[in-house]
Amino acid sequence: MPDEINQPRYWDSIYKEPDEPRWVLGQAAPPLTHWLKSAKRQLGRVAVLGCGYGHDALAFAEHGFDAVGYDFAELAITRGQERVVSLHRGGRLKLVRADFFELPATESGRFDYVYEYTSFVAVAPERRQEYAQMCHAILKPGGMLVGCFYNHGRDGGPPFDARREDVVRVFSPLFEIKKLEVSEHSIERRKGHELWAEFVKK
Image (tube, rainbow, N blue to C red):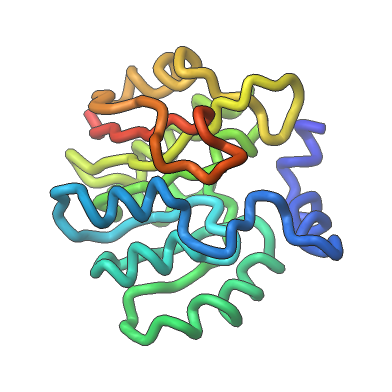
């Protein structure tokens, strides 16, 4: 399985199923919506990793951020451009088909924010340190990682479980962990299992 999930065809095959993937909410993730409405934050450029159809990227754009959504699955990007990008006319949103592990080669130090939601749990566990390094590399000095880590407590994957101690171990060498706590704003089936994160690049 880990080798398969490193290939875009694996993710495209899920999007080709008759039912939508379970991670597609049809709206921005409620923890993100809450943060966008309530947090005191500066606007900037944000990388939305594993963006799917782009609902979270759209939410950032509609709050004044310059949002770039990245996804491995070509079908996700195609549908996102049809369903989501067409809703936004402010020029602050684009979706790009890309392997986000390759972003440091072209996007090093170019983002003020990285947004995480269901991407960390989608990558093979042995690549988690590489994932943290990628997030660190594409952020500007003092940039922030925000988002949720899915602490579902089950064996196997994807999604692979993201225990709090696992997240701290992987990210703390590269980031100052400002917040990592259970979100009060998750959808019903994820209540109590999403850890809202606010990390600052060291």
